[in-house]
Length: 107
Image 1 (spheres, rainbow, N blue to C red):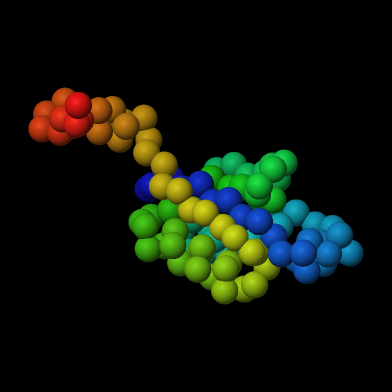
Image 2: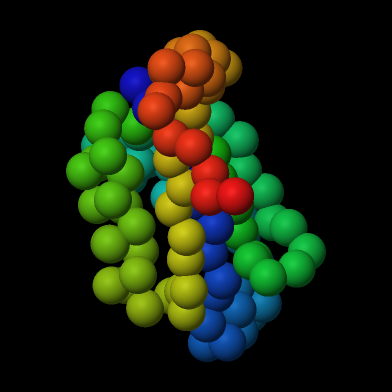
């Protein structure tokens, strides 16, 4: 299973609705994600550019993308970013493959 970081910024309307009826949106979406074969590993509400951040484990890129598409289509977020994360093993494998690269920077 691959790892993904999903970050989103709520619309003002969505934030207003959450202020009116406070609840943990990460827990609210957990059952729907689990039904798709996605596991939330960690989540929280950061200060800064984004209002919510989750790290998920998904079976493949298209499953992870489908969540991002569905959330955006729902209208509760004004922007979102999904980032594929490499595991330590995948990162190490990438470094090893880079050793054989023919790339040379312009000088």
